[in-house]
Length: 113
Length: 113
Image (cartoon, rainbow over all chains, first blue to last red; front, side):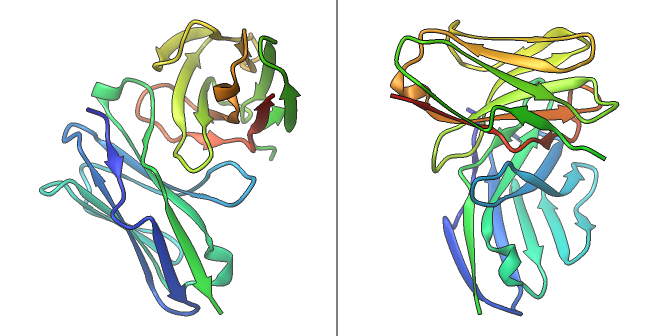
């Protein structure tokens, strides 16, 4: 079935620490993955994406790791800041899903000052 | 550059009424997707349109319909509203259909009383 799940529904970190948000996906045929950040009352905001022919991609303060063997995706945020507090979603796409993104339930990230 | 825009921002309707939500994609993007996000969950795919043709449909009843105009803007229509239709309706635009990055608008918050 369609399932993109997150291990931890809520993550609390101290300002300045690194954050790791995990995501398990069920469709081994998925070939494109996106991390979105959603703040209260706003639409999802693109953070970083990765295709299945890669296992790591870095952006500004963020890194996405893809482990296709165990169907696991993670988002690492370096030096977490209060402005990083939000709900984070991973989403997957692939031929089996047609033209839609399949989202997980989300992880709440709380940054303590 | 303007991102994805949606109107209205908020809407309150009563059961049985119909509603029309509007979306303008990022300039140059030809594909628009609609998602429903119930509080506390990830977005669920409703429709995707590309070049004015429906390219994907999620598991939603026929009360939900959409269309795309020559300027690539889109409307989502929902008839015979139910209490369970209360949600944040998100529009996302992308250059093309398929496995491509989708950028989301701020959403329309629909409340059905």
